[in-house]
Length: 253
Ligand SMILES: [Zn+2]
Image (cartoon, protein in one colour):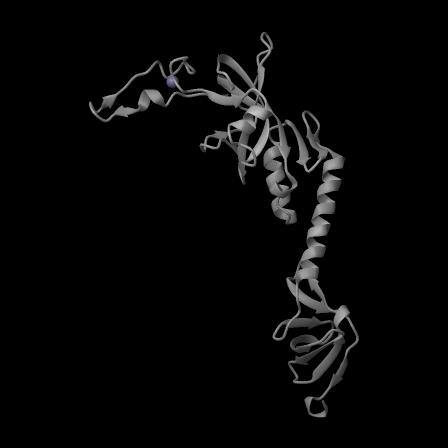
């Protein structure tokens, strides 16, 4: 990819969608890391229904044309982007435009384009560790400036030429911790759940009250464990405890 330096590229604004492979236009066109997006004209492939033949608007190799609708679209500023109804849709950012560029009142249609910068809202970033890492890698591959923004924050996440920024990663690690804390808090231990008791095996919860949990081991013996000693283990996806529990034959309870 090269942005020609003999003319200054125009900087426009647009939105992208972001999936597990990277960035796409809202219409579904994939933007590849390290490759400029070259506009193609689809108007030339439109079959006119009345005559059933291909209507050649212009040479498909030379978009955009002033009398056509082809080209990579971008707004002139963020306000225009909002006016065009793109606020809250996808990932906003700046885009380099070059080659043949057709100017309109609110924006441009360009022959070539490449992202310049992206603004990620925190809620656009997956919370799970693995998903977060793999998704962010797809964005880092574009080697553009990325900030975590919205709600008055502006935290650098990636810098062009130098990869991930410590400030952004710290923020995301904090967010991830918060996520797991919340999940842990929201998880409710209930009757029928299994609890792995260190050195004893698996017990099935029979009764939970505010302070204590009563569970039945495979041996049918009953254990009483302090509620706060039972924690959800994300890695093993199960309740676990290393608490000393008092075990009683069922008959004595
Ligand atoms: Zn065209």
